[in-house]
View 1 (tube, rainbow, N blue to C red):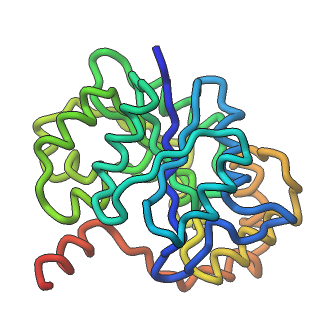
View 2: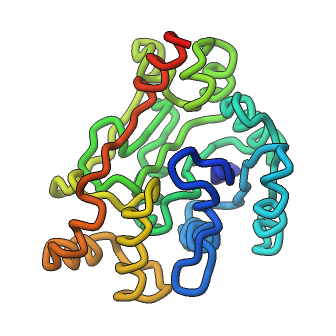
Length: 248
């Protein structure tokens, strides 16, 4: 079975443009993400899925320099980009992560992949949220992605790849991966300057190694000043995008 991690990445973030190449302890955020994904023994291959826009040329070049594959597709139909990346890599199982999560935990990735079996179409730690935001992992079979790509028609579903599973839950057998304790109030993803400041503070404390997320949580609980760096950030959701498209 070919388990392929597809890392969604682009330079054109609306809230923090260029964030995926932002420097964290001397290395680009993308490099941290790739390193942590590769550290998961359940992953056989890594593909960075970016856009065909010229602004993503440098990102694609930096990804290739890291020794991983690159697939370039639509800037807006991200679902089709994922479908193309998975097909090009010959994936039987696709693991979806995003390039703005530099504190991903390889053990958490492995737990989500391990939750996927022949009786489960889609596994994630995102639908029932107990892990800090920024440890998000989804795993699904290639035929699940094919079904989503065929059936999903809304703008939000095409942009957010797997939101169709939430739109039409009766069509999929899903499994939720939950943590032993609820730390979902914490943000380890990077959407804003405050998020980047927090991640940089964590990286200064722990260095470049793939630190278990529980150690990061312990550090943040013990240092409210660091935790406050992004405490005011409001998380947007795919449903917000759906409303926005409907109004456009």
